[in-house]
Image (cartoon, rainbow, N blue to C red; front, side, top):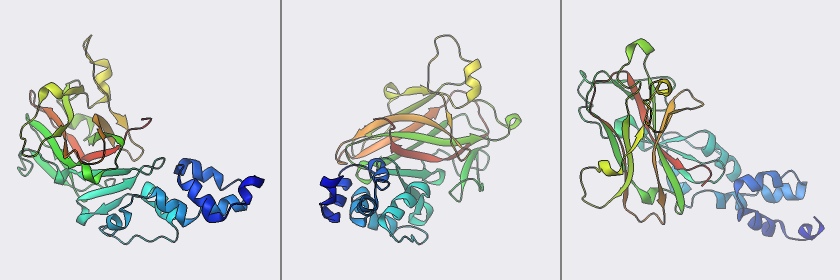
Length: 272
């Protein structure tokens, strides 16, 4: 402690900024001197994305903060709606990496404007103004391409479909149905999709009792806010110059109804 105490506060803040938010927070409890350095704006400025000012300028509501540390945790705990509600932005609490969620309205969904097949509605538990409900479709093909330049570099990301179902008696067709999911880099001007790159996922927890022997696939997880999520795949974002990543969920064999889609989230892969 004595060796550190002779350092200027600014120097100690610089040292802490080269660690991580998870390491910096406990440092503030060591002493008042450590606390001042660990809470300094100069340290937390480095934990924020380099373009954070440009990002928060796109927020649909004012972003108010008194310190950079307060701003950091606000972005972790309270995602911002950007660009008139067409995008949601947050930070990963441990790493400070960027997280984005695209609402259902911004996803490519065949016939999504046909009220016989899809219903658009508001739900109080959704951060977005609209979510999409499957009225009855055979061809389920939900996808979107995302620019890697908008994501944090040198980061392994995973993409997740955020969804839920209507009441149990009002949804059908996906209880044990394998669904194809894929995440892949695409070249400029490239069209179509590659089934060879797909993995199998299941959208209902009831699947556990209905799987045939030898069937494998990822199962959904419940989120804190009451929605469910299923991982569609992962990718490594190097320097953000790999063009676009295509995220897709596809099932075209049976009729299905009752699926409610909030959006697709792209966030850093935990533990990688």
